[in-house]
Length: 458
Image (cartoon, rainbow, N blue to C red; front, side):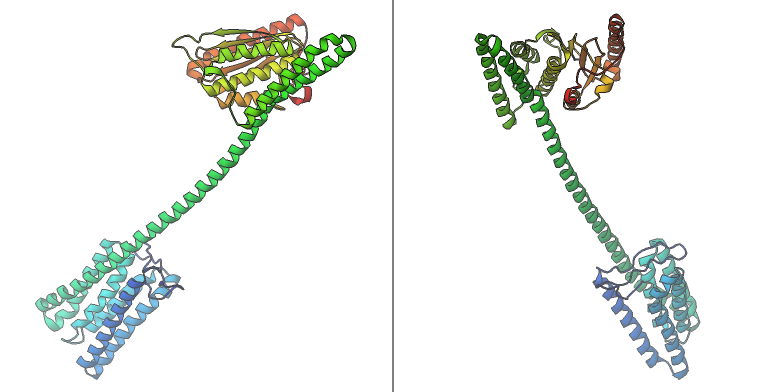
């Protein structure tokens, strides 16, 4: 135990271990009131012992008593510094203090008061050791006091003194124990507060990362929405404008129809931009995916001349339906797939098949030029954007195609291996067989990527 300040307002906390000791910080810095209580206890007890030695003994025994008190004080004051160099010094210090007090107790029939000095090492031991070990030490101090006093006082009177001084030692040790527990509780509270601050810092950091991620995702969403809506409409306007330019030279009377179509497309683009600027989701009446698909197919046939058939399986009472989020995402996927058909497939027709029974499934298929999916990868906002949309609603997206065999985009609900794994496996085998048969019939190997190579959009 230390009575020496460590720099602020606290004393040295020496983590000393002896036989059967547990490391413990004694009188930590923040508990200055306890340190001063201990210091004043030592000062008063030592001063009283010196004064009693001067008054009660003659010259010879007085020198011995003062010498033992000096040894006791040196051992007490030197303990913190020496314990830092050797952990076992604390036990040596306690034993030395007990020995010095024991010698002083044997000087005369007026030396019993020296036993009160044993309360100081008892307090030290209580702060450092387990309670059981400190209790054993106080008991040993009682035995030492009994043996030292029995010669001058007799067994009975010596036992009386033992009881008195052991009680005083126990009282002061109990105070030390209370201080120790208060110190440990304070330390635990400080550790909890520190951990709470670290948790708050981690939470703030996580919130900042989540905010940045949300910003990135929102940018990606807006980019996909622009690509799926306004960009495609502008592409259709470009094609229509080129057609109008050609008709202006060959058949001016038909230019009016092309201009009307450009006007309709421009109005549609303006409506899309208005919805995006207001951050509104894709408008779908009553979240009816089948109705939304039918409406989009009609618009596609009117604007691009693409003939699309829609087949819906299920959707009756008690069968699975799509949520608003799923409806918007799946409709966007269909829009992008049909945009790719118009731009790359070189075919006037396509088909959309929707199954509303678990596992729900959506297919977009054409019989155009096809492409090699391995070369398309995830470049641009075409295939990559469709896969992201599918993943956001917990669905999976796969593309089956080969040059000359058309293309099929399959979007399927991910219901797990137990519920839908077998069915998806069978569907995959059937799709692979159909693709192989079509390639054999066409007599073409896998070649260059056609569907999606333009501008890296697929």
